[in-house]
Amino acid sequence: MEATALVTDGENNGLLAALSKVPDRRDPRGIRYPLSAVLTVAVCAVTAGASSFAAITDWLHDLDEHARVRLGFSDGVPAGTTMWRLLIRLDPTLLATVLAGWLHTRARQPSPPPRRYRRVIAVDGKTLRGARLVDGRRVHLLSALAPPRGS
Image (cartoon, rainbow, N blue to C red; front, side):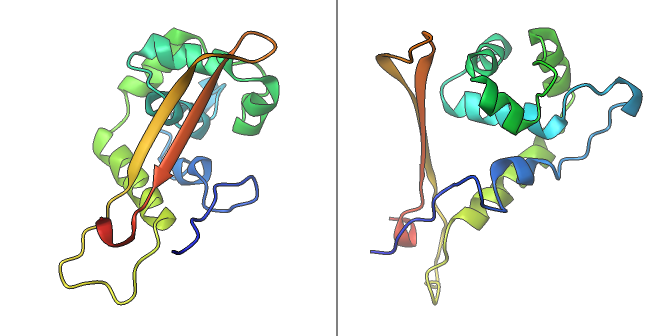
């Protein structure tokens, strides 16, 4: 069985880098938070089970300071209304295209591809019930699996 590529700090084709390709149409004078960071938080939070703008914002506020800085939130994090305003103005087709392209780079092609080949990537996110960090935040897990030949 082929080893799965790990998502690590040093990889150049990470989710944050992929989402930086989404054009930011905001007025540059009012930008306080990087769009790619907001989108990365939204994608990770939804994958972990967030189903509302408030839940996405809660997920962001649960991140530790190191994770926030790595994402680009050096001067605090956006409020729930800011997250809502940014996310409702996105082009969903463009965002889906960027995310599908990133997932496509994460999955390895079998060689040669079968005649009727369909790429399948299974994504799952969980919040561990009863597991808490020392400061009381909950533990979140995310996994993505690209089974060989779509099976």
